[in-house]
Length: 164
Image (cartoon, helix red, strand yellow):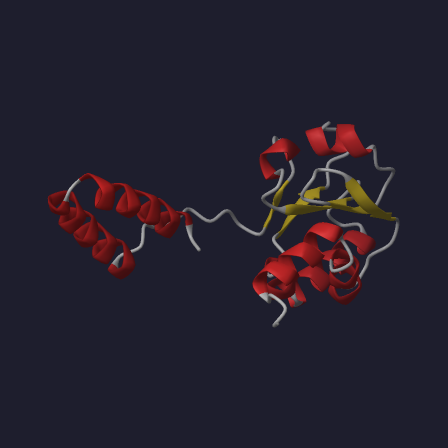
């Protein structure tokens, strides 16, 4: 359920308790929200790690950070090809890919993880470092690893509840 629908449900329940006139107004607002949902500003799935505070992703996204000393590093190029080929699989798992290819600039991610050369790091929604790899990994390997995280397993259970 989207935030708009949750908000509407709360407003509608309150309106029912207050007055029938307010209930009619709430129904109009609900109809408008269903027909014209508010636009949300989506951040790009792949973005630079420069100036990004990892705390902004806590409990919202799973950051995957790709470090290299240069954007010409063959391992970096290969990793980004892997990611771009199957970006939808990462989007399904609430992933944001952050890239850091400037070793001379100390981004917050670089300060926290201290990579040497190329490194792929997968963080959980809790902000913890779940995996570090010194070589490129395919999206298939990345998604299999993410699917083993407890929070990801809970998300799958929540989306597909067990039938009685």
